Image 1 (cartoon, rainbow, N blue to C red):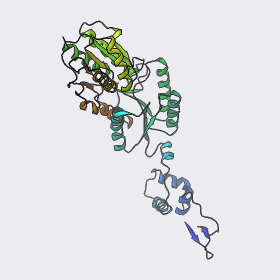
Image 2 (cartoon, rainbow, N blue to C red):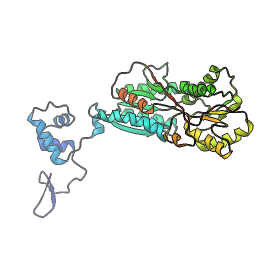
Image 3 (cartoon, rainbow, N blue to C red):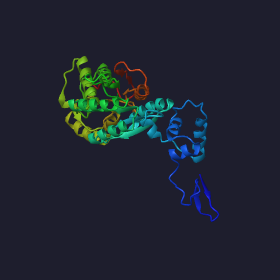
Length: 362
């Protein structure tokens, strides 16, 4: 509080002339106005006071009068108040991550936690820095989202993250990524990438297709590896030998998928179906087929993965694998706010048959 002297010059509460501080009230100001120690004021404002003493009401009244705002970050770093849950992915794009984030945020906010979304751009150093900063801020949990390298290096990195978070009472949760067997302390909520693609290939072979191509990144990331293995599983189920010559290596963009498919069609006229690692790639495949005058599914059938909202509006609508992104986020969120976790979770996926798949041409 301040008063104004007869001359009109502002003074402090003590009556000493001088400028009024504009940086906001401090804990010391609240304690002084309430007539209590800073320690007592701190306990009251941190919610650690029983609330029966007269000093409790005095502190709250003083804080309201001064417009004092409790430092939420400081409270969380002391282990009280609302703690944040962080959602970290390499990029924040498309409805898949958005749906997963929405599921986790629904749970976090319902439980009174803050929800923070961060991206790394695929930069390991940036990821390290984020985990370190979140640990310093006493985050409640970190959800590491999406595909990661299937390497020993990642396992060592993840173990370091888990240890750093454990020291502040937080945990690391993998979302949309299979568990690391050597690190059971790291929770994992995933969905059946491999079984999903396998069911798509089984659907195609059931329609008489024998020359089924695959388009995907074909790298050592967990998602691409699992989906490619599902493709091979489906071929094996039908007694079809794997042919590396009809696999198309492609980054996960519709533009590159279109370019790569155009080149592929001229070299492999016997292919009657294409299995796509993602719906994004399927959109590019569609574009290339339509530009080449190839009928879907009369000449070539197409199967995707993810069931993005737009694929039902393609012509024809895309047959694809529906993944439970929102449910993955919800389960991870429940664990993040202190729910039970006993073992890795792999949620089922669903084959959605639409107009892009049909009998193999004779």
